[in-house]
Amino acid sequence: MNYQNRVCKDCGGVDFVEDRSQGDLTCTSCGLVAESHMIDATAEWRSFSDSDKAGADMNRVGGPINHLFADGLGTSIGEVTKGESNQAAVQALQRTNQRGSDPDRQLHSAVSVIGRLCNALALNRAIRDRGAELFKQTQPLNLVRGRSLEAVCCAVIYIACRLERSPRTFKEILARATEAFAEAACPKHPSPERETKPWDSRTPMTVAGAILFIITRMPRTSARPSLEAIAATVNAAESTIRLVANEMIPHAAEYMPESLASTEETRQIFKLQSLKQDA
Image 1 (cartoon, rainbow, N blue to C red):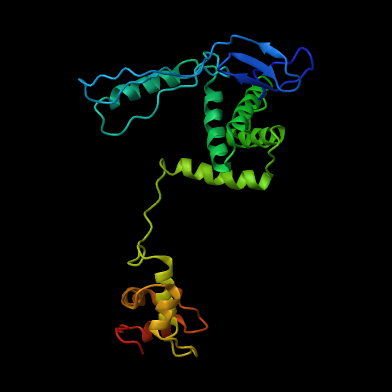
Image 2: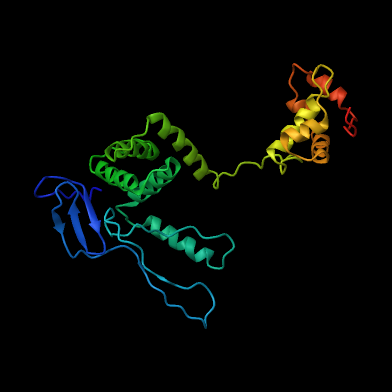
């Protein structure tokens, strides 16, 4: 991956691989060891188990250093669960943190957006990091001003995919971006709950068998397979298909094809009718 815009002294390559066990940084083009005995700045995991105390075991020592940010930290004060005892205190800290002078505030937001997009597109960590680096390079050029942050993030991901030899089309990125942004906005603007049907918990094959059973009992239908034959086809019990069919009869007008019966005809046929016998 591109490591902090470093260039190999021998071949001019920009792709390096880091050996964390040896602390070496090696050029992937010519094999030159550009740096040795490097300090691993990623998160350290330690365990201080105490069986006498209840609660979670605090086994992580700090977050990893991120060289994209001025302070080396990619962390911020997160959201607090509603109803917690310290909710007011955490919200006050959030407001103070947001009012403070953070030169990387826009970069923090961009990294979050890029992460959501990469997850939606199933892209690897190398593309995510390259996209974040590209976005940081646009900031001194004022390329983001007057443009949507999401649009710029989509553009840098498109370029990052090409640089990492895993190209994606504009249409693919835009389609996934719409889904990712919609999912991110849903917690803030919850949509009304979808109306549930009695057969929602049934398997798709059982529902298909019930629909087939109902449709083949319509006057305009020439084929009339037996309930036993339908049950064998969808691999479901006859009693289950009959039960689901009776649950679906009040809603038959919603899914009945017009070629078999109009909406009014369907309502008249199934008005006060229950498929208790295999006609």
